[in-house]
Image (cartoon, rainbow, N blue to C red; front, side, top):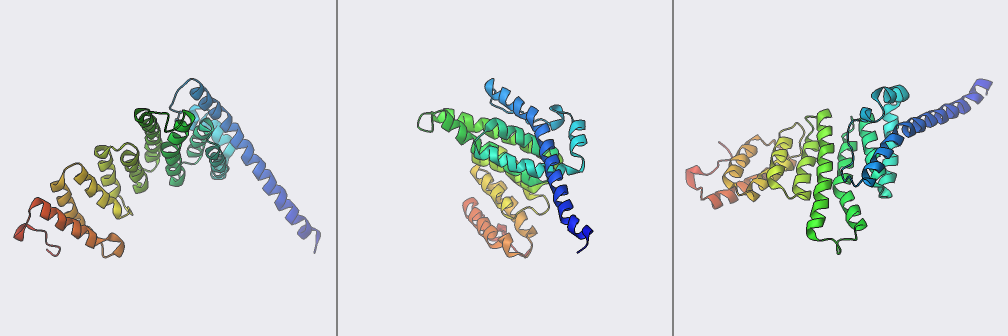
Length: 267
């Protein structure tokens, strides 16, 4: 083995170590002002953490200059730190890390969706527990906290949709927050419909939209939608065409549609 072969592993280790130091330094540089802003907001009693673009806090030039081509790698490191903040139930830290991660590298939908879920689903439990727990807070107080956090999650997803305007997953996530957190069927329905129309949308999204129309007491509209949906479904077991046809028949019974007026699956 020659000298070059002997030194190469050591050189690679030094390069990897230097890269790690640069990534951690860049992360710390941009994170500090964000954590300070989040902490001040919470101390001042402001419920909603700032989810503005990163350049408003530290300057886009600083971010680009410090990180350069390491943006994706820094975002991955920051995501690990974000999870540590989440495990520690550190609201200020979590808000700062979400802002950091999604601003450094807004391309992965994973960052947006999981951050929104933390804000909309997990943080309400933290706040309720910190205020005395479910037994101490009234239903109205609990619902107020849930609504506040749902609104923050929706703001975050609104930012995400500016980057990914045709994402069925992001539109579905918005609809689910309206449905699961706010019990707002009227607001949820258009988002499920919008998600169902995007390329590669899961088949079940359209069926949920039809179910929401029924919850809104709009059976005729659900019936018309399901008929069109059935005719557009591909020959794919995942499309669950038989389930769609069953729902069509159930609605025909409810709406008293019979004979020639009934839907024909093979027009």
